[in-house]
Image (cartoon, rainbow, N blue to C red):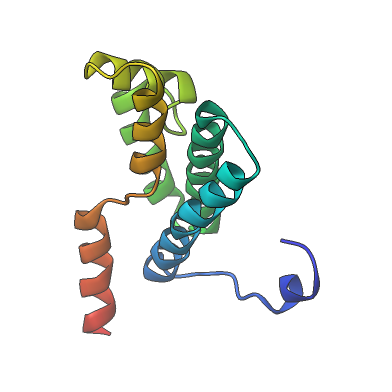
Length: 133
């Protein structure tokens, strides 16, 4: 983050703050996608941007976490789910969409759509933790 807001931005420290930060980053995807669409970007370019935004948010959120064991557990989950420590690659997501029977532009639209969604179970978990404080 650059500019005058960078110094004043508070780094999230608790897992609940980190999850909220991550959700805010993911929530920016529709606006960015609309801008790219207005600029004439292809659906594939827009899908790559959406997937990249989510991927970068995933990595940055993990960098905020103070418990290395929790980070290792997330990486292990990703490894066993995707064969990669830091989540699925764009190509893996394309392959997965095609395996669901999608073709052409529907593949890329599905990646944009799925990039905007977060895990509601995880969100509820952290909302419940916050409510207990």
